[in-house]
Image (tube, rainbow, N blue to C red):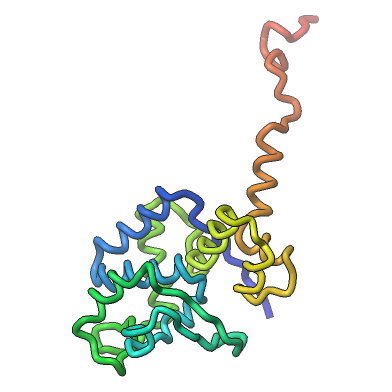
Length: 199
């Protein structure tokens, strides 16, 4: 069995996040897509767990308990700051419906969201966006704001801080920062005609 590792990165700047949300909002099902992204960015839930949410879970509750499909562990998410967007989106939706559905009112699939994100990624001229981008972006910015890797590790249910740092792209940040000032064989006088000896 061959395992394929996709190069999925977080959105590292506020500008990238705003661009991603705007492009989602301006397409078909824009309000749905924008809220899906905002919930992912602000909770760090896996996409499969976001797509499993029902209207009744969040209509009157800002503190929502979620059983993760992958780990079967309980997660608690806070939706207070998203309440205005949520209320506007669900005002005409029945309680028993999934929060994010297709035209047939069936829950969106992870694959459908992946295709949506790929469309947005092409518009952004990026090839490193996938369904884990929202979760990684949440983790990246949570760490940048709090520097609390221990809590983030618990939120993600990771077994070590090293795994969490690698997952949210901190290792790559460190590597790029270190490599930025590193060079070999690039002396300004090397390989120029004036510096070459004639025979």
